[in-house]
Amino acid sequence: MYRTHTCGELRAAHTGTETTLAGWVQTVRKFGSITFVDLRDRYGITQLVFSESLNQQLDEQPLGREFVLQATGAVVERTNKNPNIPTGDIEINVTSYKILNKSAVPPFTIQDDTDGGDDLRMKFRYLDLRRNAVKKNLELRYAVNRAARNYLHENHFMDIETPFLIKSTPEGARDFVVPSRMNQGQFYALPQSPQTFKQLLMVSGYDRYYQVVKCFRDEDLRADRQPEFTQIDCEMAFVEQEDILTMFEGMIKHIFREVKNVDITEKVQRMSWDEAMTRYGNDKPDIRFGMEITNLKSPFTGDDNATIAAAGFKVFDDAQTVLAISVPGCSEYTRKQTDELTDWVKRPQIGMNGLVFIKCNTDGSFKSSVDKFFDADKLKQLAADCKAQPGDLILILAGLEERTRKATSELRLEMGERLGMRKKDEFKLLWVLDFPLFEYAEADGDEPGRWVARHHPFTSPKPDHISIMINNNPVIEDQANYLSHPYAGIKANAYDMVLNGNEIGGGSIRIFQRELQEKMFAALGMSDEEARHKFGFLLGAFEYGAPPHGGIAFGFDRLCSIMGGSESIRDFIAFPKNNSGRDVMLDAPSEIDAKQKKELGLN
View 1 (cartoon, helix red, strand yellow):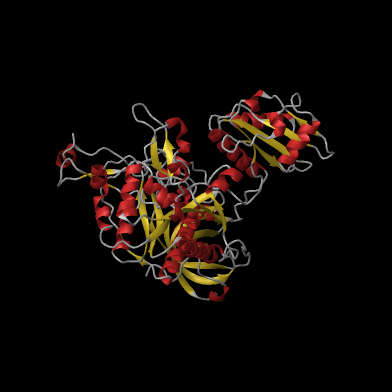
View 2: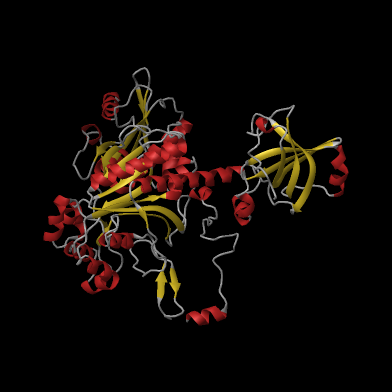
C-alpha cells in the first residue's frame, strides 16, 4: 500500500495515528538537524518532519522539488500551527521514507504565483496541472458537470451519445474534415454540434435527450474560443418556448446553488432582441449595471433629436446615427482622461473617428467638447434626454448605424469595467428572445446579397410569422432596400441565455414539418437538389411523424470560466490549444508520413 491517507485528509483528531502518505515534494526547508518537507497531492499539503536520525540519509539522497515521495510516521500536533491550510494543525514525524521517483528541476515554479509564461506552461501542461490554481478550475468544471447531469437525470433526460464522424454540411463555421482510408477521396467531418442527431432522436421518440459533448469548429481563436469545445446539449419533444425556458432556467439556478452556493431566487429577466439592441447596443447585454444607451438620432425610426438637429454640427448632421451613454460620477475627468477615451474609441478594434463629451458639473453648469455648437440651454436639454445627473459625464458617438452601435456598446462595457461595476462575484442572468430569423449577407464579387440563418437553418419562425415565410418569395429584388423585404421582419422562435454579458446558452424551437424546412433551405439559396444532398436524411425523417420539438445548448467551458472568474476558457480545459490552434505539448497538428498519405489516397 503506497498510502493510508491523502495529504489533505489528516486533522488534529488523527493525532497519534500511524500514517503513510505519498505525493510530490513542494518545498524542502532545513533548520539545523531538522528538515521540514511540504508534501503535496491532489487533495492538499501536509508538513513532514525529518528528525536528526534521518538527516544523514537525507544528506546522502537529497530531496528535490517534485520528487515523488512516500513517508511513514505518526501524526502529531504542530507547535507552530498554519491556519492557511486545512492540515495546518498537524504534522507527520517521519520514521521512514522512500523516494519513489526523482524529478528534474521543473521549468517553472509549481505554485499559484508561478514564474512560467503561458507558452512555457502549455508546453509542460502536465506540470501546470499540478498547480493548485489549475486544480481548482478543473474541480469547478467537474462540479458543474456533475450538477448539470444530476438535474437532467432527475428531470428524466437520457444521455445518448452521437457520432463524431459525420457528413460535412458547412453552414457558418468551417468543418474539420477527416479522410477515409476505406472510401478514398471521400471525407468525414467532425460535428460542429449534434444538431441534426438530436432532432432525429426526437423523431425516434426519445423525448428528453442530453449530452455533455465535444464539438469542433475550424475558426479563428480568441480567449473564449477553442477548436474543440464542450456543450451541454439538450433537446425536448412536445414543448413550446416557455417549457424550454422554465426547464433550463431551473438547471442553471441548480448549478449555481450546488457549485457556488449562490441561490438565485428571482425569475430570470427576459428581453427581446430589439430591446437589447436599443438599450445596450448588443444582443448579450451585461445588466449588472445601468448606463443604458440613449438614441439621439436613428435611421430606422426617424427620431432626430431636436437639440442636435438644430445645432448645425456637421459630425451629427452627416451621421446615420448618434448614440450616447451617461457615465455616473465622472464629470471631474481631466482633459488627459477625455483625450485617452477619444484615443480608445479611435483604435482599429472600435473604429470610430472621435468622441464628443459633455460634463454635467455638480454646480449645475455644463462643459463640453462642442461648446461652439451647443449653448448651455442645448447642453442642458441633451443632459435631460440622456437622463444624466449632476456629476455625470455624457459620452457621444456618431457615424454609421451598425458600427456606432457596436462601438457604443463596447464603450459602455469599458466604462463599466473601469468603474468597477462588472464584479466577478456578482452573477446576473438574462433571457434574450425574438431574434431575427435571417441576416442579410451583402453581395461579394459575383455572389449576390442573400439571406443567411441567424442561428441555424433548423430554427422555426415565431408561430405567427410562419405564414409570412410560407407565402412570400425569399428572392431579394431590391438589394439596396433589403430591409423592406417581408423576410427582414420575420422573428425566430429562438432564445439565448446571457450571464454577465456573455452568451452561455442558445437554442430554439425547431422546424418539424418538411414543407417549412424546404422553404427555409430555399430562403438560404439552396436548390432542391442541394437540400436533398445535404439534408435528405432529415427531410425524410420529417415524413414519418416528427413531433414538435426544441432545445438548447450551453457553452460548458464558457459557463465554467465565468463561474470561476476567468476571462479565458483555456483555464478550465485540461489540455487546451493555444491562440494558433496548436497543442504545443504534443506539437500538433503535425505532418503525417508518406505511407499514411498513400493509404488515405492523399497527395
